Length: 178
Image 1 (cartoon, rainbow, N blue to C red):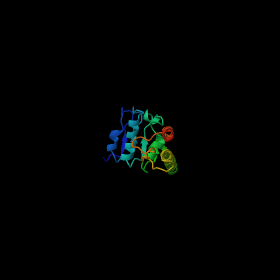
Image 2 (tube, rainbow, N blue to C red):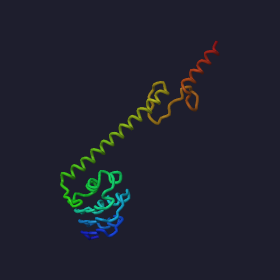
Image 3 (cartoon, helix red, strand yellow):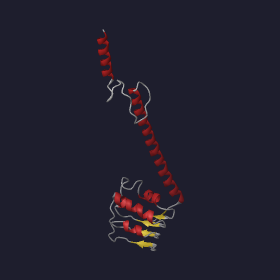
Image 4 (tube, helix red, strand yellow):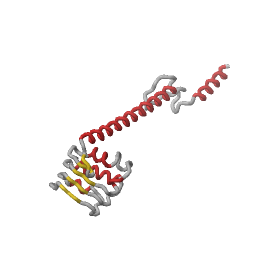
């Protein structure tokens, strides 16, 4: 638990999960290991950063995970690590991490997250408007809250009839009145 520096280069390491048990790590070098480019390995990498808050230097490449596509490591390795690390990370893959770089990456992430949230909110609002409009059409124009049952226009229990059926009933009643 008090280990601060660990170098496990080219030793056949396939999982980063065991490293989460070393919270005092300040330097971690796991280059040239067969760590796969998988979602599980990416989650393990994120867990290492979450567990090792004092991590100031991290080296991973070359390995499959370091060159994984953005579908596995969103934003690429550098952004992924910067977003999951504490403010202690000063060196990543042998290159210095500046406060401006960290600020830029976090700002981009927050902007994308806000845009996704706004898009989801707009889609939800449009869906609610469609549901209210559809229900209002069945009530002769009276708005109905989304998820609420619209009254049956023919006054009978069960499924509302369609507009052509209502006209047909009206026509039948009109002919019977003669």
